[in-house]
Image (tube, rainbow, N blue to C red; front, side, top):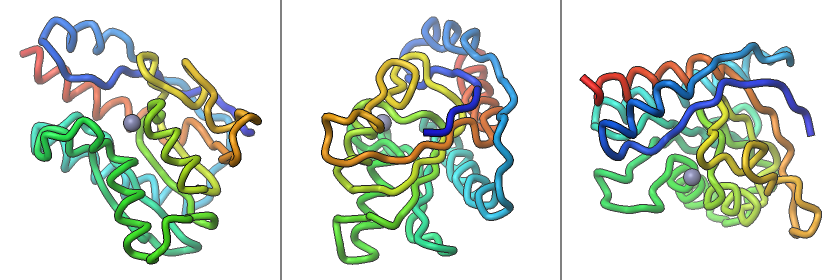
Length: 185
Ligand SMILES: [Zn+2]
């Protein structure tokens, strides 16, 4: 499991007071690993999806599922529009990717998401047999990849997901920070 530092941020909209507290939690850091052009391009697409989410009043988190050089699914958080507590960007992306390839097993697929997955999404990544996860900033309030839990490399589970943290972490954190900053005003 490759590990570098990333920028922590919190993800739950909630009240304005909560938003204020969450804005303070952000502290960007530099990723140590060199990323390929393709990796950066895929994360840029996820960031663009996150930006779309913000435009719809959703907490800006975006995700992309790739298979080889191809994007098979793009999504963003849809909790508000879908009135669905499980409609995190990763869950929506996994559903779309599985539908696109006609198989719930996504063994050779990678998922890019702009913020560290929560326990629900980390569990879904294991269930989908995702090969590798790339994520942006850390989530100090719900991160289940390395912050609060380490679900993806837990040997008791039947599948492990390779992890690349801190990919464009500052960009992912900035989207969240400005979203919560606007809530505060
Ligand atoms: Zn989640």
